[in-house]
Image (tube, rainbow, N blue to C red; front, side, top):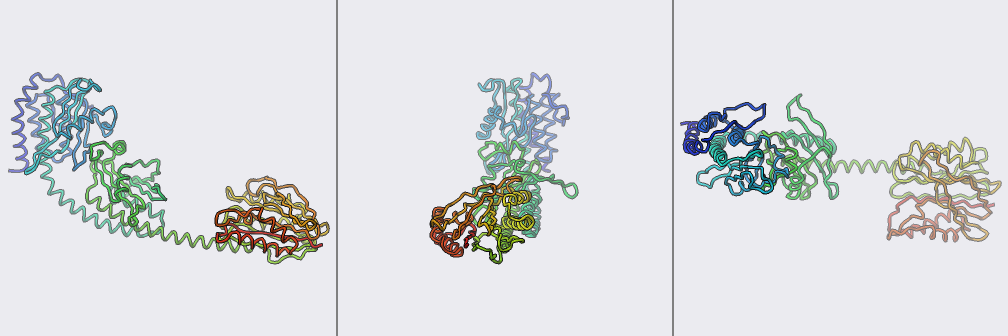
Length: 639
């Protein structure tokens, strides 16, 4: 006797035992079957001929059903017709989890809806007690109009306790479901439970063979994935490749990857595709706002540091996972990226296809992919760090040479004036510079002195300093230094066009005239001017004023200001690397420590003055690193 004959015989036996009770319960008949959607066609479960007829049709049809999906669909439709209910759904038990299988008038969002709390409670009671739950209308003070049936699918297992396979739920809010309807639904569920068991037994051997072939294919795929993700050391390309391969391997609909940055996981790449092969495949990138995912699944993978596979919309305690239900997700896999015992990221895929659920082989392959991805990402990050260090080293080398090229190669010989300049670059190159620019028509009697400081450090600051020096020399050669304020205004408009946002430069420009022993200057937000008076042996500090260059066009430096210098007087100019030098306690040197040095060495030469200042700054700094360039210029009137 074939498996089909056995099934038919068993079903017929059950139908004969139930026929008398059902016929009695249905003796009054029904006016009309429950309303179904217009697009639903009759599939052989009509009940026009009364209970004995539909039981016979049920047994005949079940003998020809070839898979669980078709069986559940037909069972649900028939139960809704027999009970003349408004809606219903079927949940199936998979291990310790319960998931949505099919529904009519009730989709995956039905149970999580707060309005259906009573339905959820009824289903949970049937699941936990593994027995039918029947609530006629009026039994609940919260929902007096609703009547409902929750009926578990239970099959007998040889040499073991009965097995819970799932649950059917139907309800009506228009009218009461009567006791006879409840008994009819119970009869259908009992018969279908037997059919579920027969289908499961007949498909086990076939599924195990398919699983073995599937597993072998996955192993070959993993080798291909390993070769693919090892083909690049570019981090951005690798992240996209990992997500693409994760989708390809799992045949999922969507995927994403996150990486740890400090204490947080940061979204990097998200992708959706239509799971079609060849030219029909279409994909698009998803940003962080477009990619909704199950926080609980991701959190579990991170906490346990192992892959997670979820193939239902309910947790083990039968509480619905809202994020999965709302997204209509059928199956999820999530795997941590591990660097030793530390989570460095997360790979996640999910599927909305009812016919595609991830299995054990899928999870093992996904875990293998995550392991390969972890190694590839670590190598790529190490490579990028080496490349970044080389780039920074090259950039700093260029900036350092640029900065040295800005300095004057010789000290001009100017009548009545001694000069000295000093610059000590910090470990990270900045944008300080000083310059002595002679007047071409009066090379020994007139001199322009400039000290500048660009905000920021590195190559960008050096480039702005170079631009300032070149343009300043060109303008002074063309117009002379009689009007420093005009020169700085022109220079500001030039730099404002090319400086990066937030970048600026302070500067002081002085013009010396030996014949009158005067210094005419204009300042663009620079440090104070220190004037040591030979007549008193004391130093005055003058705020230079003005607005830094390059912030915006048409910004003004100070008007031209003249300083009358007497024989023996000394002028000291400096950048903030002097007064803001910090010791090991992060305390600044400040102007108060600078002034006594200028007083003490004012009678000495400019070289001695600058050396004394630098020595004291270094002594104050101690073992603390130099944080900024130190630039100084000293001018002494000799006659």
